[in-house]
Length: 242
Image (cartoon, helix red, strand yellow):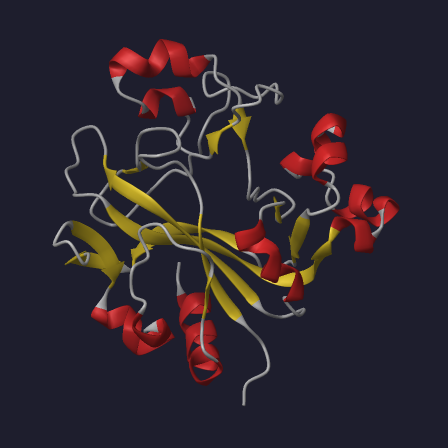
């Protein structure tokens, strides 16, 4: 059985955190990564000052009536792709501390067509970490945490680190980690038990990562751990993405 893990994790703005989907810019799936807001207003980086990889401020991706307000809003950059770190102190993410070196933490986000490009909201793989280290901050040790995770939102702010440290899970990506150039769609529309529309894992993706025992809703879910029998194929597929 393949020993390394593959985990799917939703990140980035969405209708519940930020109030928008991220921007999909063309039919070849160019996109920009828009992190969630920092509701503690601790981080000095703002949507109005931070620019995406196409030169626009991140505030420009919000609807016009909200842009002035969002320009002043602090950003919670997590994951960050400059030094490849991710952190979270909440219980649904606690198991990520068990990721072994070489495992893949695969990030997906909600995207929809922006400006003149129309595309309905869907879920897309947007990047991944090839894990080099994972664990609880208090077990990794403060010296190593500040050396390897200094760019992470939960570490760079002393007040937040002090509050989160006891439960904070940190994941560090190695050199093969990357933010994709083009997003890859993993969802299709289904319905929940009440018949309401729901984004679920596409049939194509189920052939690659499995169906998680029938739990195919990925609209809002805890991290999805790919079953071992699918891990090798899932790794090869993710690494093939541009």
